[in-house]
Image 1 (cartoon, rainbow, N blue to C red):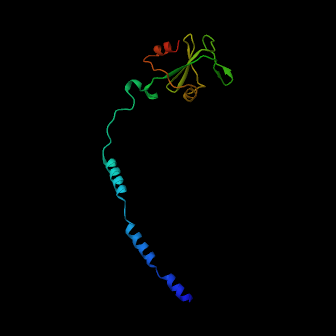
Image 2: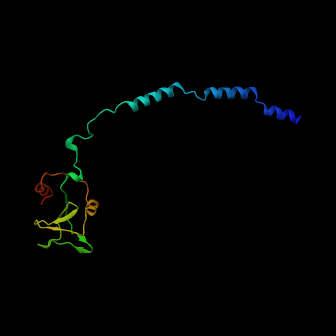
Amino acid sequence: MFHRIRRRAAEISETERRHLEAAAQLQDYVPPEIQQLRAEAERARSAPAPLVDDFLPPELRVPSHDQLDGRMTAWPSPLVLDGEMVTCAECGTYRDWLILSTRDQIWLRCRAGHQQHETRLDTAWYNRRTGPADATHATFEDCLRHLGH
């Protein structure tokens, strides 16, 4: 009796045989919709990309840092570095500075127009403490006027 059961289990039933035949037929089958999508994707990849103008019109473009001679920002409050208040070497003023960043150097300019190089500051310090530029100017004097100096 057990031999007959084992023999039947070893043989493939008619249903299993039909299932395996259908699976073999469908193994390489690709639905027409998928073939169409693949063809469209291939055409899109092989077609040259259309040439378009830059995203922004020229009047809205901002120059990059390497196109500028420098950047400047107003610093109305006292400037404290290493626990010491910075004062102008010529007139003794300690507030209302213009901080200039140019050629990887930081310069301080007081309201009287005296400038001094500040070695304790660098461009990274300037970048951390200033926001985006609100305007660009053709000359240094235009920028001074814009900042009220």
